[in-house]
Amino acid sequence: MSAPPSMLRRLQERAQPLIKRAETFVRDFEWTWTKAVIAALVLWIIGVTGMMVIPSYWLYLADQKLSWRATGCGHSDTVCFWLFKARDAVAAGLYTGPFVTLIVAPYFVQKWRRRLRSESESRPVGGYR
Image (cartoon, rainbow, N blue to C red; front, top):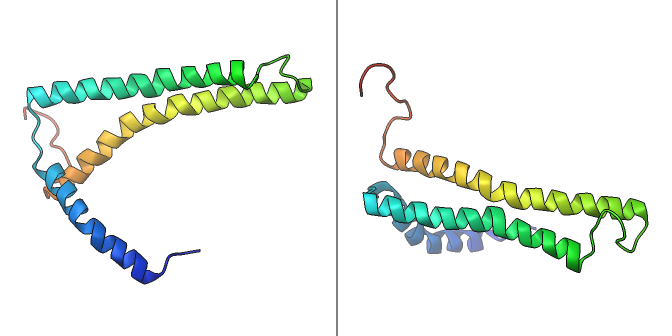
């Protein structure tokens, strides 16, 4: 089911000032040492929370509260086996998602910034820059 065209157009019109403000910020932003240190600290906190605290809490929750263990989960051995594997798969996803996001998102923001500044995607090679 899709939204009516008039609703999509109204949403685009309402979002246009926010998009324009974001594009202006990305285009005109310049790094200083202070901004870089603050950004690194914030990204470190987000990374630690996303890659360590949340998956660790999930493993605790799945083992202690949900009883998703390899044996003795209250179901047959086959169900316990698959619940145990599902627990680990969710934990792997909870770790991988923030890791990939912290790698990929800056790349796309930099690419967006170059496009807004009308800079070339190619980089000079060889010699001194």
